[in-house]
Image (cartoon, rainbow, N blue to C red; front, side):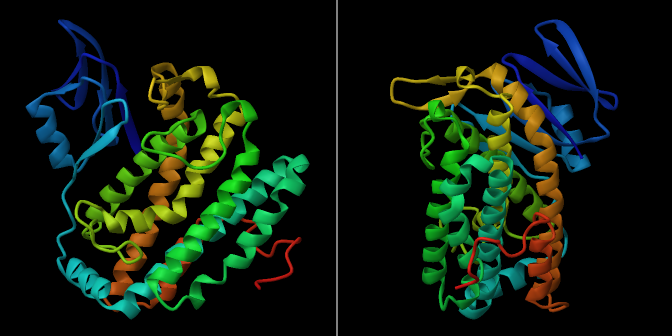
Length: 339
């Protein structure tokens, strides 16, 4: 997949044969072949011609518009899958507590496994953090098997919250103290790491909505996340096991100094935002991570479709979620087992 990121005020995009032409005022500043493009991200005061909108709609290109300083996303969706049976089966399962719980358990278990594996990876890269990461690594390892034992969604969400607290307590040690990252905060983010995570999560959520829609699902009907007005609950479910991929990206961006604290600005209300020069480097770095997430979303949604239509059991969804796991996803040597 080829994604096009446009983050430039006052640029206009139009269709020129089989290419996207870029203009500033009366000047033509470049072209991009339209054929390989499957996703377009727009930020800032960008204009699109009606002809281009018509072509990208016919070609099935998803468009994500990031508005304002806080990059609120608006999506222009490609054509959905034509098989309405998927949406009917999805709603039936969401309304059946036992079926919804069985699927929700898989998303939580996969998320906790990914959180554990990320901390193990960080510990291997930073041996001096071994002591600081010992407790969260062991706690997450023990929690991995607990999702299957939870009797209802409230208990399952409680487990997810407890795992998140352990995960971010460990993750905080991976970043330089000067970045001010002590855990997750948002709306608005208040430090460079959280600003990076918020932008990465926003793009990931948009990908989950587009993927769900393209596979014939209703993005608003979830299993772990219940139906709520305005919330794309299935996309929220799909994102959970993939969040550690964005956290890994943020860790590497700062560890490799692709991003530094000078790339961010803090406003009077304490909100922290990534500046334009930093965003350019971020977009370049995030695309490979998003491409991997797209493949994982496609596998998960294909398996979920087969499960909902009765062709396979929930084991197919579990296997698809596990397909993207880190290779060291086995037992933790410092743990005493799945207590």
